[in-house]
Length: 439
Image (cartoon, rainbow, N blue to C red):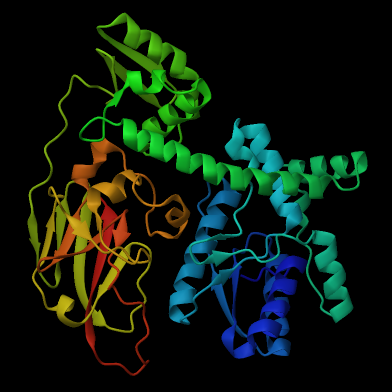
């Protein structure tokens, strides 16, 4: 991923040196936000890749006028990188985050998000995305580029006070003044915490799995009462996060209220940020936003003709015949071979449903994928799971079947046997392209 800045220029040159120019593809995304400067960045990347003998793919992107500009740009950049990786049959997406970026992220999260998780910083890898430069500072990378005779571009928006990262960068500079090895100490602390967090996470997962009542959605308060309070608070938070599908840091602070409600007997609702905890006769569950209303019944199964489309609850699923070389995006699924001729059915999940998610190397029940609980913690970042699925939404997700095989659950997982585009450009094989969009 090549912006033209010093970090990504260093990354490209190093990747070419290690892998060879024929095994590296550079992606430059031009948002056109800085007028002539954006055009100059693109020209610089084109010239650099020509000099290095590396293939360059340039994409132009238009961002919405409202919202968090940097977040929107990042999401679009990673989406385009995934498409480019499939197109060029690349196994890895390399990004040029450095030690300064990692330390700035830790400082920002520490200011904006309380708790141990804020101090973990950027992972060195997640799925097929790697960050090989996290041990090098911004200054070291630019010095290396200068020594190699490599030019780079500086983005003036890096000093724009409208962006939070600009203030984090200034704070890091102040810390350098306070102590010359401030960055090293911050990053060493993050590395130690990451190892400890992994071990603690495994302990919490085990305690929760052993404490859950039958069905997996009710937690006896007596199980928490028998744990050391710090561990009980973490188990309670993990329980709430599995149920809601979203971070729930406030759940840790609710432990004393939850145990008090359980000891007093009867039924009581405890509201925290992002969730409601229902304590009934010593058993804890996560209440729906309005538990007096029964959940809506799941949508009816629907046959999907070719070509054609069906509306399934809040989703619209379309099927079209395409050439097998078509590039599927994040909200698309490409079926070839026998799956392209099998009857297609869109239905709600059923008890015992299993599929083989891409990247897992085995089969998993849809229930386990949805709660993201029985998946080993070390594998979670590499799974094709967009997010934890709140319990109330699970029956409304479309399960797409080709014959008897579950091939796709939009928003959750693609089947392992769904092919990556690797056909020759002259392939005349036909395929079925499925598209899923919220209604």
